[in-house]
Amino acid sequence: MRVLNSFKRDYTLHLMLVPALLLVLIFSYYPMFGFVIAFEKFVAHKGFFHSQWIGFDNFRYIFKMPDFWPAFRNTAIIAILKIVGNLIVPIVIALLLNEVRQTFIKRGVQILVYLPHFLSWVILAGILKDILSPSGGIVNELISALGFKPIFFLGDNHWFRFTLIASDVWKEFGFNTIVYTAALTSINPSLYEAAVVDGASRWKQTLYITLPGIVPIIILLATISLGNVLNAGFDQVFNLYSPVTYSTGDILDTLVYRVGIVSAQYSVSTAIGLFKSIISFVLICASYGLAYRLANYRIF
Amino acid sequence: MIKSSLSRRTFLVCNLVFLTGLSLLCVLPILNVLAVSFSSAGAAAAGEVRFWPVDFNVKAYEVVMKEGKFFGALGMSAERLLLGTLINMVLCVLTAYPLSKDSRRFPLRTAYAWIFVFTILFNGGLIPWYLAVKQTHLLDTVWALILPGAVNVFNIILMLNFFRGLPKELEESSLIDGAGHLKTLFLIFLPISLPSLATVTLFTMVGHWNSWFDGLMLMKSPERYPLATYLQSIEIDLSTLRQLNLTDPDTARVVSNRTGRAAQIFMTALPILIVYPFLQKYFVSGLVMGSVKE
Image 1 (tube, each protein chain N blue to C red):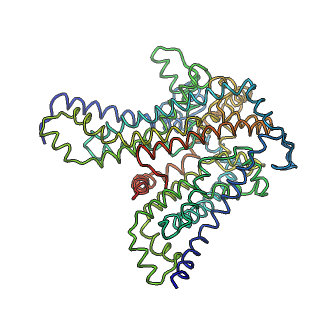
Image 2 (image 1 turned 90 degrees about the horizontal axis):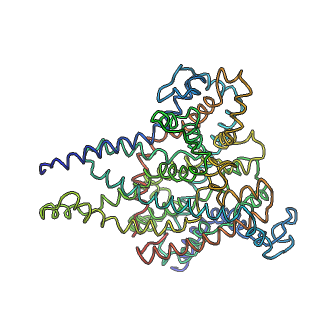
Image 3 (image 1 turned 60 degrees about the horizontal axis):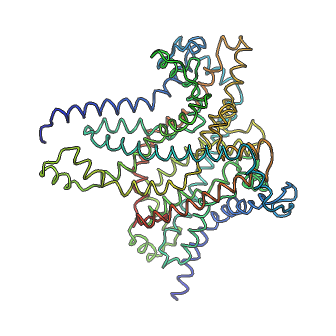
C-alpha cells in the first residue's frame, strides 16, 4: 500500500516536470549537440550530424583570424573591469545608504537608482547615443561649457571601453546594492550598541562591525562573478559599437554574431562560440565549486 | 541618541548631497531624452535642451504614430508579453514545485534539477540554437519569441527556494486531507507565495518587453518585429541616420531624426516606467525571500 501510494505521489510530480523537460530538450539540449558543426564543413541541408567532418580545421582557422585575439582580449578586459566596478561601487553606495536615517530619503534614492536596471540596452543605448553625441548631446555641451574639447565617447577608441564599463556600472549599481542592503539589515544591532558603549566612533563601527558583517556575501558574489570573465555584455556592446570602435570594443559574442549571421560562416562562428563556451563552463564550475567551499553556497 | 559631533553632521550632509546627486544621475539622462522628444528639431540640434522641452511640440510623436510599423510592433510585443508571461509562469510553478521536494521523498529530484541547471552552465552557441529553432518551423511566428525561452531556470530556482522555505506541515496536512500534488500547489502553495509570484511575474513581463535579440534572429519579416527589436533596428546605425538627416532638409525642419528617435525611445520605455512603481514595491522583498535557504 505504501509503495503504491508513493508511486502515485511521484507520478504526478514526474508529470508536472514533463512540459519543461520537453522544452529544455528541444531548445537547450538539441542545440547543445549542435556544437559538432564546429568540427564540420557544415552544409545546412545535411543537418548537424551528416556534414563533412574536418576535425580541428575551423579552430586552426579562427586562431589565425585577425579579429579573434583582439576580440578575446577586449572581452576579458571589459568583463573583468565590469566585474570589479559592479562589485565595489554597490558596496560603497550600500554603506553610504546605510548611514541615512530618514526613511523617505532612503526610499527615494533607492527608487531612482534601481530604475536603469529595468530598461533594456536598446533603450539605454538610444539614450546614451543621444546624450553622449559630440554634436548637441547634453554631456558634451557640459564638457564644452567647462572649457574642454568635446569627447566622442562612442566613436573614440581611447574612450569606448571606459564608456562601456561606466555605463554598465551606472545601469546596475543600484540594483546590485539590494543584496548588500539586505545583508546590512541582518547584522545584529546589539553589536553596535556594545561598540557605542566601548566608545567606538561611527567610522570604527563601520570598519569593525558593518564591513566584516558583509564580507561573506562579498566573497560569495566575487567568487560567482568569476564565471562571467568572458561575458562582456553582448546586448550593450552590440547596440553601442560601430566599425570605428571594433579595435577596442569588439567582443567574442559580437564576433560570433558577425561571422555567423552577417557572413553566414556557420561552422567558424560556432567554433568561436564553442571556444568561449568551454572556457566559461570551466570558469563557472570552478566558481561554484569555490563558492561551495568558501561560503557553503549551493545553487538549489 | 547621543549628540552628534560636527564631523559627523558634516559627513551626513555630504552623504545626502552625494546620494541625491547619484539618484539624479540615474534619471536625468532619461529626462533629457524626454525633453528632446518634445522639443523642436532646431533647439535639439543646437544643444539648447536640458531637462525641459524647448519650443514644446508633439510633432515627433505624431510622426512616429503615423508610421504604421510602430503599432504593428506594439501589437507583437503585447501578444508575446501576455502569452509568454502566462506560459512562463505556469511552467515556472509546475517545475519549481516537484524540484522543491526533499530528495528522500522524491529521489529523482536532484537528477532532474541538474538537467535544468546544466542548461545555464553550457550552451551550444548562437548558430546551433538558431538552426534548432529553425527546424521547429516556428520562425516568424509569435511562438518563436515564447517557446525557446519559456523555461527560465533562474526564475525556477528562485521559486523553488521560496517553496522550500514554506513549512513542511502545510504540504503534509494537505496531502493527508486527500488533496493531490496539483491541488496542493494551486490551492495551498500559490496563495501564500503571492509576493514571490508577483516578483517573478513582473520580472518575466519586463524580460519579454525588453528582449529584442530573439526578434532580430527569429523574425524573418521586419513587419513582425516586436517593439524592442523595431527600436533596435532603427537606431542601430547612428551615422546613416545622420546622413539621412543632412540630405533631407524637408524632414529636418519639422522633426529631426534625433527628436523622432527620442520619442520612440521614450514610448518604448513608457510601459516599464508605468509598471516600475509596482515592480519595485515587490522585487526587493520577493528577491530576498527567494534567496532564503534552509
